Image 1 (cartoon, rainbow, N blue to C red):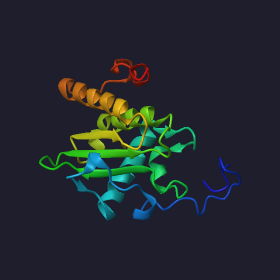
Image 2 (image 1 turned 135 degrees about the vertical axis):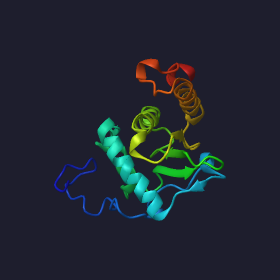
Image 3 (image 1 turned 90 degrees about the horizontal axis):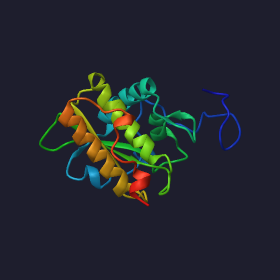
Length: 180
């Protein structure tokens, strides 16, 4: 994508992103509380799942509209070294992956939409990875993480109960109305 307009000016992206095939721990968030006690993916395991994530997000158009890119690219964006996804295999059930999204800011208005989109993408295309379920939560650093995570938990429960991933029209009450 060299030569593409950058939101912060210019067109050269060569030094803004890590390569998809490399694991750069200093350019991704530290695992948060949702991943505590579980086997956090690092190195080649992290890279392999994240490459699948890029493809799944592309097919389901999980895009960060602020930066106009596939949300998987956030992990590679050197301007936001503490933002992106971290993954862990759930202790006691290796068929479950936990994914924690750390947004770029504590008030990121897209966190709700992106987390639900990620849940739907991973679980709606579960044949593209090695897990029966991907649990998704937003990092506690986000100001509305409790409300967003409650909605994600409800969506997860509904998905497990029905055996299908509900679409947006079947969502539990909107997180915004729950916070008023």
